[in-house]
Length: 285
Image 1 (cartoon, rainbow, N blue to C red):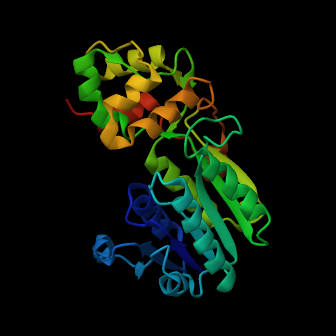
Image 2: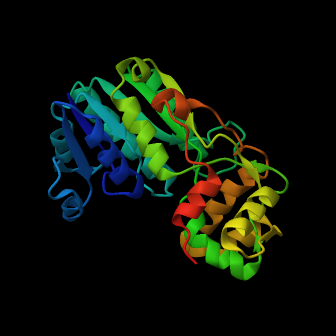
């Protein structure tokens, strides 16, 4: 059995490769990387590195040769059309190379009324896979908890969370827990090959008052909640895709980023790390 992880040099991809390497017995693991230089991340590990350019058919076919299970982690581009084209190119390659199983790593901002500017992509792909003739499953991640840790010093300085979500809750998962669940899914054919959808989240969500109190407890500094407007939030973080990021929190302000599930437990038999435990493990004043 050969597994291919795309986006393998990214924050999530590296973790999926590591988790899979702990689970595969007698199988082969291939890491698809856009920059072959980043393949050095896997030096000394039993991982085959393959150059994978989503717009180069030769590299797609080379990466997908003899692959049984494809774990497709999309690129981080905020260009909606480009991201769809990337997916379509890989889907065509999966068909040409007779890939048995396609696991799409998604995001839970896929509702029909979701204003997040990347939401059309996340809604499109499952429907496209449904008509592809491939065996598939898709994983919907909730918000990553990881960026909260480097954000904490700014929040301590501000004294407040500023997400423009009003009194609505947000749902989170750590990248490590997401990777663990994705790897577990990849090695369970009955769980992955029948169009299943999984939502990965912590066992509960948090409104911003609750999250601020928890952060105050962890940091020892008061962090309240004074939201800015969606427009103000976009202007504050232009280097992080401000307007598009703001559109995601606009979805949060509609209650569209609050969903939780027990799918992590279904896939792993364990519980995801709770938010307080995650922050305490990673925050260092």
